[in-house]
Length: 496
Ligand code: BGC
Image 1 (cartoon, rainbow, N blue to C red):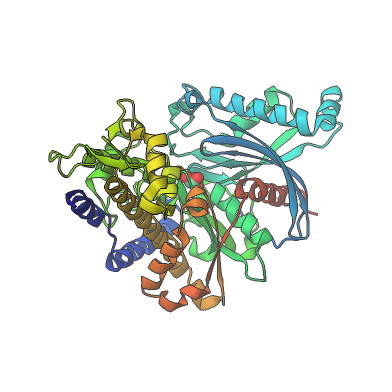
Image 2 (cartoon, rainbow, N blue to C red):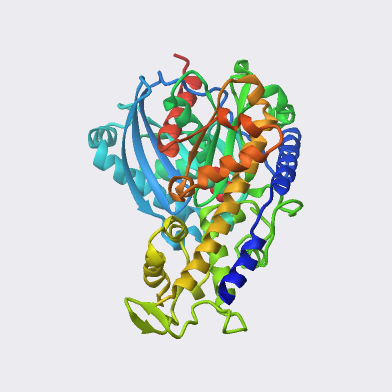
């Protein structure tokens, strides 16, 4: 019982009350408005030069690549024009060494080689014709999903502001990432033009809009995966800093202003970096201190998949190292497994002792576990954390902490989504507010959407109207969505 009481005390530190949620939303709305007015703010509010969303009738074949997390993906997308599409793809893990390479060339030449391999497999004819007679075949338009904060100055132009999610290549900062990729593509002589720079959230927004049912167009595209971020449709005249940007670029970013809309990439991962309203436990503080970017992406570090496992690991470790052995975790000398009494042991090389040792999938499995005596949690502790013969009491404590960390993340997610819904006034303007989401947390963490909805109902200005907010999984934002933006870019250059 002592362990359970101690776990309860820790769980209380992760509670995030309705009052705090509302305080969070008010600050979020304030930072959104500040970001629309000027450059260099906490929530960046980056104009994407996408000024309309698709309606499902678009057609054509486009290439898309996606760099933004663990894998690099290349795909070709055929839009059929009736809200449907087909897609061929290949996926390779990004080698860890390239994430922290010395030069951008190392990373981008690797990406271009993957595109070459993909063309040889799926578009060999096109590839060979181009090699034999360059200029004879059309170039593929490619949508480049690059899911890091980029100061975008045109549909296929943008300078890297900072790396996130464990990437760290100093030399790339401030460089135009489309140019970096185009240079490597050209040096391989591929018939490919980088036509659009796409954040994965913008891709998600476009993909959801292309496929979503009914007439309501989608307001938000959001990712709750390795990282977190959201993009939304804003009224162009509310983007007060647009004039300043247009002046600075000499109007070089040619975009269609007649729609009166602009998709904005919020980069909400850096909401409240100074920690005015975000919850903060000792585990959050230590995680940040030992990350590659201390003081930055503070919202993301409490919400997204890359970090939840690490918060949990730190909480479990402190419970394991509790000075009072009667309270500590995994210290049972006579735990009961299959009617055999045994002592709980933690292997010396357990991931419990390694930074980033616990994957978010661990949290999803434990949260889901309804088995007798938490048998599944016991198994996954053994398999993933090398903890032998954990007691049921241990498992209960682990599950309580998992639940607390996951639920806090979902309630924080509601702050961001709720903030955008309120700031755009969409509940007043439209019958239904549509949100497309993607990422491992929303897809696999049990109850993530329900916890978001519960928090929505506690937000002043949403309350019961939560029912009119529709949340749908938008798979393939970075493939389909990027293709749709490449199409917009293509049409902008060569009007149909
Ligand atoms: C990046 C965003 C991205 C998000 C989701 C964040 O770390 O800053 O650009 O959209 O992750 O992938």
